[in-house]
Length: 411
Image 1 (cartoon, rainbow, N blue to C red):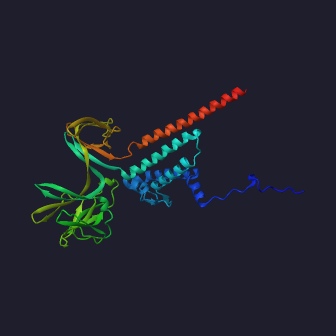
Image 2: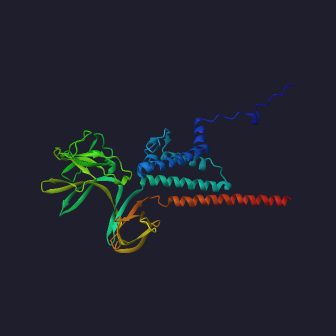
């Protein structure tokens, strides 16, 4: 008699088909995706390291790791590598999602796996710290001479337009147009900036990231650049050191009756602002790097430098400063790898000058000023990861000891 299979037996029941949502979850939370993303991030870092030799650090970081860079083609020594890659920002975002789904939601639960969960949370915290730093950190520099003080840093890259009325020989109230409102004014685009408390508005167009004003009589325009009082903006290739770029744009005053004055040039390479006169009032319009007010004043008391024997390469340079705030003073030493952290700001010893200075010459110190809300988060995340690994080790070790003890008792 033939033997009939019991189709109702759960052991032989076909597995239910996974839905599209379930399959998507499996892919996004899988170890395979995590491995691919880690390899991709390593490859991006390698290509970026090679490319920054020719393109500079700032331009390379923007190409490989900025949120606007979704896909990119690497370039080595001026030659394009035909290998489309996902941008580092979005690779990191995918890795963050993968860790949250696979390392927190999908991971096995229970006290035996709590160490793995803690370590995954630490890595997630580290990735979040990178995103916060990318979107919200600010960087600038502050140069202070010995015996002098400063209470403002200058942004490394952002050029702004400042409009101010001059009273008693000094700017009274400064109106600032931020760089984010200027950088898209290319290829004929223009924008009107209104100042309700001034007798005029300002129209800006023709923004260039790196340009210098040139007289038409000195060098005739070659690309149809617009004429502004006998001058035009001549574009230049970006510098490898992006801090050396000097932005420029065209501007014109728009009066309250709608009439427009002749256009003029605003440029970071100019030494003097443009002057606007209205009746008996005087205004200045200037383009410069954004000034960043500090919540305290810094005084450079003494700067010292030590050099490697027989070279001019510094082995150590130290700035002794006084932090002045609300009538109180605090003595602080800032040196290489030992920054000053205060009020959410970090002051690094960046460089010094003047170049080639001799004995007895008064020095100045240049500090890199960083405002990063996530400044210490990577350090904290490493502590969390290390603690999670320690918990995992102790859990496994405890289980091993318990297993060995049971075997010994059985024998």
